[in-house]
Every structure is written in structure tokens, then in C-alpha cells.
Image 1 (tube, rainbow over the protein chains, first blue to last red):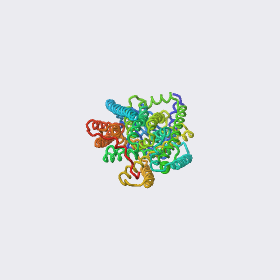
Image 2: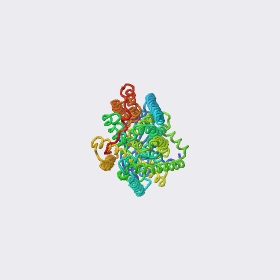
Image 3: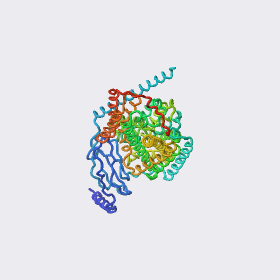
Image 4: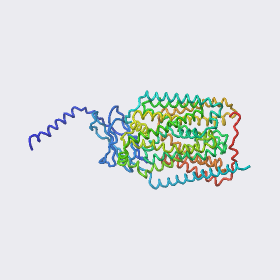
Length: 161
Length: 478
């Protein structure tokens, strides 16, 4: 290993230490989702909210794996709530962290929020839709047939001497 | 909330509110001169033609809820959500034959309450009035709240200011002009709404890359495109029956049926349903674009204005602002007029002072319109809950009125006890399902329970109603 190569890690460590010393430790505060967020939903959407900190940017991620191996960024910006829809059936995981003022990633991740999506079952949906279709057809038939009968009656009445 | 920045300056918002607000009030005063008596004020002389009739029905049905909730439906439930919202147009179209029957049976009728009182008796009438006032207040409050939120998102005008100005303008011109003003302004507003929706549609189509749109949605929110999105599929029928209930029972639509010429009413309602159908699909598409365009949505109620303003920029946002203000005004005025008529005719005159003079009634109508406006303002001031919850809570109540109205109009053997049982059990069971299972089946269940009771009453009852009873001769005072 050459001299330059041996020195490199030491130099990097020095640069890193200087960088850390230059950024205030409070630049990216810890943040957690509010506890009032429901843990289950039948509708496949949820509003995430967290503490409002004026001017603070946050990153919110979503995943279907608990280790966030398939994480997707939902928000990188300011705010204190986010509406998320189109969730998959089963477990959906969310986490949030504050970003420092330069947009870096120094904030630590919140505790993972697990939201269980429990859509109505296929059998329930089909049964309820069948009820809906039956009520609709009976209603339309009742109104249209009565209307036609009404028109015939009126024509007969107006034709009578 | 994610810190969305309003596209328009508040002063532009106030300027637009001022211009259009003044125009509606002036038109209200001008048209109001035609209302020489109470019948003119309440029913526009019963002589409304096809163009005005279709326009007023369509404009009234394009509410701030259409502009705000249709995108929300699409954002929450995808393609099926968009279609579910559009099924509300079936209510208007199916009211066409009903309007014909109403005009045939009640050529001198005033309100939907008159029908229920004469057809089913006082108990059913009382229950019906409770249902319709609860629904009307929920509709008015959800519209006032939607207006305040929309103006805030688009122009940064404070929620309370925006909501208050909109309500004030609508109260003022309804106060001066009655149904003449409502129908006249509705015609102009419907033309602006249609032109605005076409404009927004073309601009949105031009600025979106559909391949990217589809790929992103498929990759990141596939459930929104799913053919089997459970809640959306259930809300398809739920929304349809809610729409039937809203239109079939509410005095907003009955007063229009009474106001139109007999041969005009069915055509006008059928046409307005046809014109209304694509509007929620166009508005819903905007909501569906939020994910693919990577626009973070802090509150689902705000998705429409947020995406529209990002998509269209400042100039487009002015158009959206005007369309929204027109859709708000055209619905709030109609509901204010129809609900105050119902209160005046059914509660004040029929229950409290049967011998009241026309002059007193006309004066009372002003107090009632102002009173309703004040109550709606007070409830909306808090900006509580979400719009969907506010509106859909009344779904099972109005769903339970569908069959008593239809059965009562066409079948002699449906009687008062049957109607009371249908409305009561439909409402109670529907509300129970709302809280225990979900809003997305509550109206469906309320309507279904009501249907079973009405059909059973129709088959089992021995009573035969005399249709002539419905043609009530108005009292001297009225």
C-alpha cells in the first residue's frame, strides 16, 4: 500500500470531523408521527401528520417491507401532514425524518408506523354490489314503466270527448 | 400540512370575488323586480322554459362539492371513484319522469313537503322535514366549507373571509330576487362553468404526458387503477343511491319541477343529467394526477385546487377560481331559496300560522333566508371534519326517502305507516352501517331497507289513495 493510500482514510476522517463540527447538532430535530393516526383502514388511504416546525423540511418514506428495502419517497419538503392513497392490502410501513437546513439527510428516522389495510373481502363486495344492482334495476323498472303508463293514460284522457 | 403556496395573490382573489359578487347581486335585484307576488318569488311564475330549466338544474348540481369532492374521490379511489361520483347524474336523469308525474298530480303544489303531508299524513311529514333539513344543512355547510378551503388554496384568502363573502353574496341576491334571480344567474353560471371546464380540460390534456402519467400511476399507486378496488366499487352504488335520494326528495328539485312548464320539466332534467355526467370525470382526472405529477397533498379536500393551480399556472387558476365561484353560487343560492321556501311553507304557514297574509309571508321569507345563511356561517366557521364525512353522514337519511317518494307518486296502496317505517328504519339501519362498516355502503343499505318496506307495504296494504287529494287548492293567504 503506498503512502498516499495509507494517509487517505486519515484525511477523510479529518474532513468528516471538521464537517460535523461545522453543523450544529440541532440542525435536524427528531420527529415522530402523531399517535392519533389510525393503525388500520378499510379504504386504503391515510393522512399522516407530525409536529409542525416552522420552516423545517422533512422526508417521508413508504414501504411494504418492514426493513424498507422497497422504500419510496413520498415527500421531501416542508409541511406537517401528507395524504397517502392507493395503499396495498396488508401492511404498509411509513417513517419520517427531519432534513437539515441544507437539505442533507442527517436527521434520524422515526419509529416505523405500520398501517394495516383491510379492504372488504371479495365476497362482501360482490354480495353488496348484487344488492345494489337489484335495487337499481327494480327502481328504474318501477319509474319507467309507471311513466309510460302515465303517458298512455294522459293520451287516452286527452283523446276522450 | 405540506406548505403549498397559493398561485394567485389574495388581492386578485378579492377583486374577482368583488366583480362577480357585485354582478350576481345586481342581477338578483334586477330579476327580483319580476317577482310581483309570493308565487313569483318562490316558483318564478311556474313558466320556466327548456333552456333556463336545463341550465338551472345542471348548474345547481355542479356544486363546489363536484369541484372539490370529485377530485378527492379520484385521489382516494382511483378510476372507479371518478365514475362513482358521476353516477350522481343518474339521479337528475331519472327525476325527469318523476317531474312529469309531479306536475300531473300537483299542478298547484309548492314544495316536496306538501306532497309528503298530503300523501302520507302528518307523522311522515314531520319525519320527512327532519331528514330534509338535516340534509340541506349538511349540503350547505359542506359547500360553504369547500368554498372557503378552495379560495384559501388558490388565492391565499383566509378561509373565514372566503367562506363569509361567498355566503354573503348568495344570501343577498337570493334575498332580493327569489327563484327568478336564482334561475337567471344559474343560466349565466352554467355557461361559465361549461366553458371553464372545457378550457381546463384542454389545458390539462396539453400539459400532461399520458405515457408517463400511466407508468407512474401503475408503478406507484396501482390500486387506483385496479379493476377490483373494493371501496370504490361499493361506493358506485352508494353514491348513485345517495344521488337519487338527494334529487328525489329535496325541495331544490321539486321547486324546479313546479317552476318549469309541464311539458318542459322532463326534458330539462334529462338534458341536465346528460350534461352533468362528464363533469366529475374531468374534475376527477385532476385529482388522479396528483401522484404522477408528484404534488404532495396535505389534505385530500384540497387536491382539486392544488393540482389545478400547479397544472394551469396563474392564468388558468383565474379560470378555475371563476368556475368555482360560479358553481358555489349556483348551488348555494338554489339551496337557500328552496330550503327557506320549505321552512316558510311547511313549518311557518302550515304548522304555525295558517291564515298568514302574502305580505307577511314575503317578509318572513327574507328573515328565513338570512337566518339560514347565518346558521350555515356559524357552523362552517369552525372548519371541522372533512367534506366527505359532513355530506355522506346524511346519505342514509336521504336514501331512505327514495322509495317512499317513488311509491307514493305511483302506487295507491303505499300508505303513511309504510312510509314512516321505511324512512325511519332505512335511516337508523343506514346510520348504524355508516358507523360500524363504512360510509361507502350506508346509503345503499338505507335505500335497500326502505325498498323492502315499501314493496311489502304495497303488496300487503288494502288502502287505496285518491290521487285527487294531491291537487290542493292553496289557502287564501298563500
